[in-house]
Length: 187
Image (cartoon, rainbow, N blue to C red; front, side, top):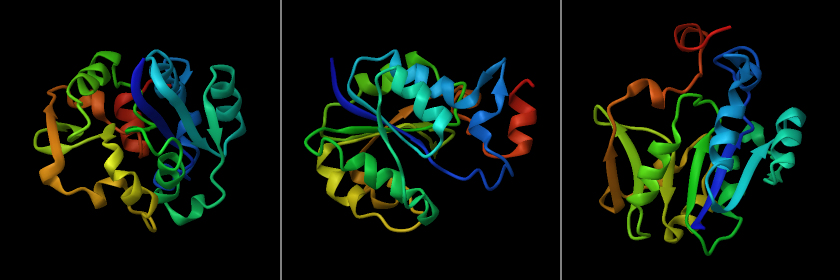
């Protein structure tokens, strides 16, 4: 078992997409299922999904995920992070966004293999940080105190980061906009 809590954040409003992007399909499969299935394939200490969507809750529940509803989702992404970081505060957390259908198990395992609980581990492509990110347990307090639409990267002291370089940019694409969906996903 991997001594990390996996947290999938799936309670956003898809404002840039104009409709629920997580229910859009790629190769006949809803986008959120790619992340849920990927996390399910890895033996994490605990698997959590933060969502308000009933379809996503039902699917993740069948796979044994802990389901956390986000009553303050309107406050921004920090609310999902706060809820996830509040679970198992004695463990490191790996935060996944739920709109990355091309992320592979091999890349997630590579990030995990680089983690030793002394440095935050994050993927980097062309000098740009990406998701998912593994936070050391020493960061749980900072994550639990986020405000507004700030993500976890807003509290990182970059001397505490180990950057793992990747080269397949498509693998780390978020499907946030209609343009990204049309460019990368089939209908």
